[in-house]
Image 1 (tube, rainbow, N blue to C red):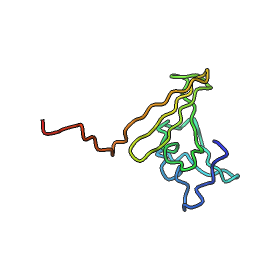
Image 2: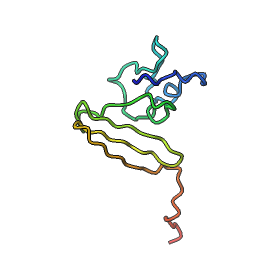
Image 3: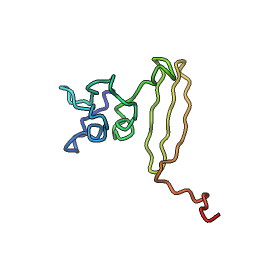
Image 4: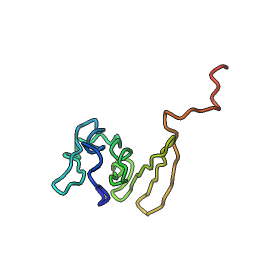
Length: 110
């Protein structure tokens, strides 16, 4: 976890704790978000996407990357921009439409 976490002070319960499907996120004694048991994490990245401070990051699982690789989402209104940093520090960004975005190019009348 990064030092950016403020424990979602404006919320009754931190957003990462609210959204985690495995009920793994909680606040540590320092008031910052922690995962109770990283081995049980599903890697769904819900906590990362919802964090308003950008305080949570994940390491890409060893199956698809090495220890230093990172995958960082930036939530937009209708899109998620994923920043991928490989083990050599190379950066690539990918933009993915949220499922809520209306695609005007997709004509269902055909």
